[in-house]
Length: 239
Image (cartoon, rainbow, N blue to C red; front, top):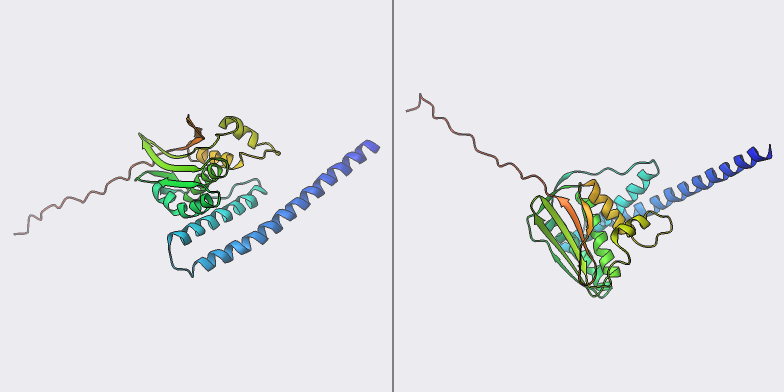
């Protein structure tokens, strides 16, 4: 009789702890979402500029993370929207915020988004993936971080390279370790890899003589069909 009773008490304790954590997560979600909403509304009263646009993008990224957290409690993932994304424009919008982060770490950041290079996907999630790669390079790399867009055949890529010590272990090992509860590094890279995978792409580690060189490899968007003007057929009755 004692055994089943102890088992029941243990299950009840685990359930109660789970409920407390859910309540804490709900309160945290509420406390963070309010200031984010207010900040975005305040941005609406400022003169449009690249820096304001970049801050708005970062706030929307934070709101997306909260949406994912709320959806995860129900065993789901927050939805998104699929559209044509021009990677150069995406990098240009995010660059001012990335540059501020780089300057705070004493790092020189260069962003080359010359295109056009289009992919199909959720622009906010793709921005989130790129931002995670840049943040990882800035925080753990050396004095310089380079971000550039490339296109080859039917593949598009966002390259993020630095001149630091490189990844502590191979990328595959880092991503596997990031799934553990006690992992201290690799969460941002794992998120970027997951976003790439859901867009039909992958996150790769490329050979580099110094530092780390990561590639967000994505399929190119199919070309937009050209609209042809209908042929004008002359009216036989007209003179």
